[in-house]
Amino acid sequence: MNQKVKDFLRSFLINLPLIIGAIIMLAPLLWMLSTALKPNSFVASTSIIPKEITFENFIKAWEFPRVFNPDVTMGTFILNSLFVTIVITVFGIIIDSMAGYVLARKRFPGRNLFLYTALATMMVPFYVTLVPEYLIVVKFGWINTYIVQIVPFLASGMGIYLFRNHFMSIPIELEECAKIDGASDLRIYTSIMLPIAKPVVATMAIFKGMWSWNQYIWPLVINKIELKPIQLGLTMFKGLNVTQWGYLCAAMTIAILPLIILFISMQRHFIGDLTAGSVKG
Amino acid sequence: MVSSKKEWVGYYLFLAPAFIIFVVFIFGPMIYSFILSFFEYNMMTINEAKFVGFNNFKSLLANKQFLAACKNTLIYTLTTVPIMLVLGFLIASLINSKYVRYKSTYKICYYIPYVSSMVAVAQVFSLIFNASTNGTANQILTKLGLEPIGWLSTSKWAMVIVIILGIWKQLGYVIIIYIGGLLAVPGEVYESASLDPISPFTLARKITLPLIRPTTIFLLVTETINGFQVFTPVQILTDGGPGYSTTTLVTLLYDKGFKEYKMGIASAISLILFLVLLILSIIQNKIGDRE
Image (cartoon, rainbow over all chains, first blue to last red; front, side, top):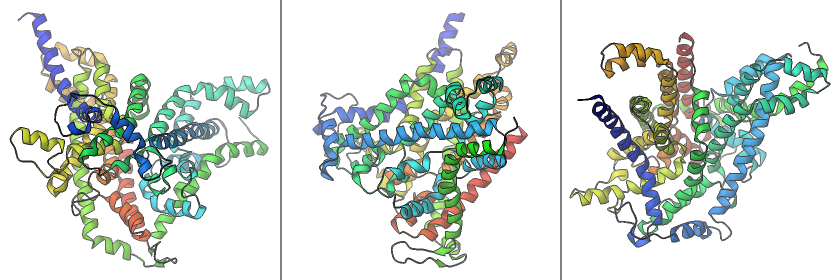
C-alpha cells in the first residue's frame, strides 16, 4: 500500500466514529426541529425529513400560554428571561470586578477574610441553601417579583477570584501614573482597570448569561405567570397529548435556537474561555 | 501602597455589594439551614418551629424514600461520570488527531447539547421515550417488528434514560476540556514517541493519560459533584417515579421542602448533601495540591 492510500484509510477510520457520534449528539435536536415543522397529522411518523413543512406549530406554541392567562405569550417569558439575564450579567460583572479590584490592589484590615469568604462561596452548592433562602425571600416579601430572580445572583465568588487574578497580573505602574495625574480610585477602576480586564469580562458574561438564561429550580418559587422566565414557561408544555407534540417541539425550538445561534457565532470565545477558566495545573 | 483610614472606607464600599449578597444569600442561609435541620417546621400547618434534636436525621435514615434517593444518586453518578470521562477522552483524542481536518465543526456538533437548556431537551427526550406506542423510540421498535417498551413508566428503563440524557447533555463539555488538556501536551512528546513503533493504545496509556492526569482529576471531581446534584432531568422526565425508582437527593429535597413544606427535613437532607460535597471538594484540593 502506498502512503496516500494508508493516509486515506486512517483518516476514514478516525472520522467515521466521529461522524456517527456527531449524528447521535444532534439527532434528538434534529428530531425536535423536524417534529416542530411537521403538520400535526404527521407527528407520529418516523421520517426525520418532514414531507410537508408548516410553521403553524410555532404560531400555536407562541400563543399557547394564553390558555393560562390571556395576556401571556411565549414572548412574555422570553422578555422576562432577557431582562433578568441582562441585569444579572451587567451588574454582576460590575460588582465582581469592583471587589476583585480592591482585593487585588489595596491593603486594609480584613482583606484576607474577604478573599477567603469569596472563595468559600464556591464551596457551597446552590441546592444546599435553597430552603432557607426561600424562607428569607418570603420574609422580605420578594416572592413574585423580578428582584427575587436577580438579587441573590448578583455576586459570584468565581467572578471575584478571576477578576482579582487578572488585576494582579497588570503592572502597578499603570495605576501609579494615573494617580500622579490625580485620578481617584473610582476613576482608575472605570477607565483603566475595567477596560483592561476585557477577557475576564467576556468569560464572565458567557458564564453568567448562560447560567441565568437556563435557570430553573429557583424561579420555581415564582407563581405569577406574567413574571415567569423562559425555562419555567417551557414546563407548561409538559404532558401534552400526542396531537400537540408539534407545539411542544416548536416551543422547545424557540427556546433553544437563539442560544445555539449565539453559540455558533461566538464559538471561539465560548470554547476558548471555558477551557481557559477551568483547567488548572 | 500604604493607605489611610479614610481610604479604607472607599475600599469597603467597593466590596460591600458582593459581601452583603454573600452574607444574606449564602452564609446566612447556610447557618439557617444548619439550625433548621434540628427543628420540625412545617410552613403550611404551624408557625412555630419545634426543636427535635437529631430526629430529622433519624427519620431520614429510616425512610425508604431517602435511602432510595441515596442509592439512585449514587447509581446516577457512578454510571454517568466514568462513561463520560472515557467517551470524552476517546472523542477528544480522535478530534485532536492530525487526520481530522474539520476540528471546529466536530467541536460545535458535540457541544450543542451542552448549550441547550436542560428543561427543553429533557422534554424532547420524554417525547422520544414516551411510554405510549406514539413515542418515537416505540415507533421505531414497531417498524423493526419489535414489541414497544414502557420506557419512562417502567422503573428499569426510567433510570437508564435519565442517565443517557445526563451523559448526552454533558459530554460536549468533557470533550472540550479534554481537548484543552491534550493541546497543552507539548508536541515534541509525540514527535519523539513516533520514532518508536508503538501502538496508539500504548501511546495513550503510557504517555497521554499520565500527562493529562490533572485534567482527568479536575473533571472527575467536578462531574461527581454535579452528579450528586442531579435535579432537572429527573424532575422533568419522571418526577422521581415510577415509585421511588428515580428519586434523587435533590428531587427529594425539593419535594420535602416545596411540595410538603417540611422545611426541617428538607434542611437535614441539604446538610447531608453539603457534607458529601464538602468532602469531595476537600479531596479535590488535596489531590490538586499534590499535582
